[in-house]
Length: 275
Image 1 (cartoon, rainbow, N blue to C red):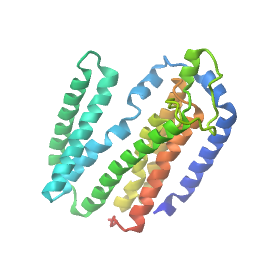
Image 2: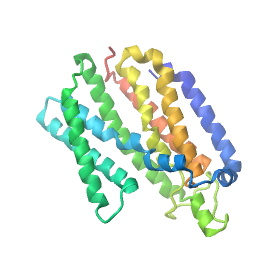
Image 3: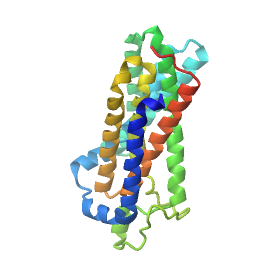
Image 4: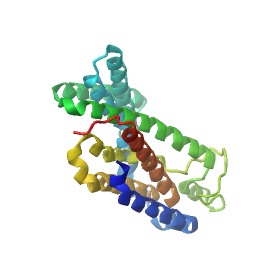
């Protein structure tokens, strides 16, 4: 299945290599030129750009709940769905609500959303031939979300790179380091971009042709839409002064590569029977 995306994969990594090459020389200058943290579009994507990452568990958990026949699997699926919904609610509350009880409100809001989603799921009828494929896709989504989060966070601590906005606050560029310089544990977390990697969870759409054979002629769409969305979120991180070009490029490459690995594993093990 990887072969059907061969040309797009080559294009992606050429683009990635070019971006990292440009960033090695112009990372700081690009941020100085683009910096505009009051830009409303950039603020919106700062708040909502990570939604593909946050919505995975509610959707996957709901799907697994209604496609599982074993009781303990249904319980686990419900925990994933409702726990993920609470996590989503906390994320939304962080940006759109204020006050002493915003976290509690976020949890309650998220749980209501999770229950609503599960009620909607009860009304949906999934054709039998797609159930196994959608189960695999749901599990892959949850696993990728967890693996992406852990990998990005570990890399952030390893690189210890100072964010551009912190350089501005300090009034000096002296603490700037290029992306190929590993600083170690400094508690600075610029490289790579978590927002971009989270936005890149939408690369999961590339797995849809594994489930639905009819979508194989839509592979360009399955690749281009997440690429464009992830790139927009990444670009707004530059405008916000939160990251550099190399940060967003690596964040996008990490989740894209993980998606390809997941696709290869699913394909090689024959976990999905195409219909």
